[in-house]
Image (cartoon, rainbow over all chains, first blue to last red; front, top):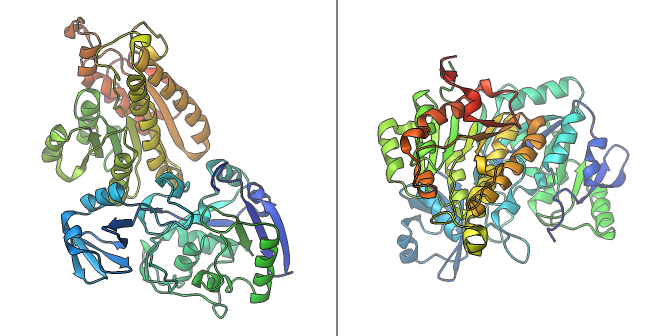
Length: 294
Length: 243
């Protein structure tokens, strides 16, 4: 499933203006972007947040200095948690710890990444060329095929790169979007404004970047940028204000991610895109193929 | 002035010898330094002296998870790093012996620490450099990698692998504003050298503090244009710090 170069996936481009679909090799993506187009990436790196305690799986997310949130199907045995220096703050909701560094050591020692494949792969599989700041519970996977080689070609083409940080949350079996921490630095807001002024496109790499960028209201940012928690959910009624296009994987029809795609494409075109992708054997999941919605 | 104040650097193998000398030199320039080694006793001393300027962690470079914890701790606190010094290395063997007399385990240990360990740490820290389009990696090598001698098998092969990787990385990362330097610190009065060649006179060997200066120089803007080159302590001469 995941062998070969990370960039050897396919990408289906869908243009809402003419309703035409194009099937490409991902590595040729630079030919479909124009100089001055802005690609926005998520800097958040994925942590191995799923840990088993005596047969009970617990997922951690939203990490603070002395506590984090948890998601679990049943309450983890408190004794087992205590053995690792953890204590329940709120039943089934929050866990406290003495020191974040020791907690991270615990995660890396005992945990594995949240996975949708038949097993969890080693951590480097869940790292993209820009995974810098640890904090995500689920892998923001759309950036995975952007290998350094692809990034270099995009740079030579004159594509501009912008960055945001959004740490993804996770829940067992839950597709309800949770509030997530995000930071859109001033430099990125500036790049978005410049691109739009010049008539260039702002393309988010991954739904996380859409959520972060669309949470920014023009003129409300400070010198640092915009930072906080976002509960924004997007659907077909949302009018995009900062983003023009999206590169993302294939999502379940029932998921909130799929609803988000409707902000970019009319539902009918989206259905056509998914039908066509299935016909051509596109693969879903974090190691799967991509679509480019313009 | 090298202008390293508040810049963020990572130095491996910093409990003794060259690593410790580099960490001290960087700290005295006002930089923030994350240090690691297999035991933290000596690192704690750095922490107690320089306080919050220092992040220290026990890291076994043979263990990927241990490397990931170290990298995550640093990036969680700092968000990015400006430079990495891959200094930690092991002989693999207790004392020098012929290649054919070494066990597979000994060969593998040297490769895992000196080559793979360095590569894994680079993989964890590089994304933050690529995103900012700036960064420096200094890989510490040895003359035995280019002038292999009998007895140095495991160590020399691993350093040669590190050298080859450095040249390739330097070429690949050129477009991203990330420099990769290879640095040969010469024969120093360190524990590794004492174990390899116990008969050498310590007074004739270089002091780690002397060999550390060029690394600090390479980590600063002054190292611009030297990426992808193998530099030795002897090419630097004295007094580069006073420029």
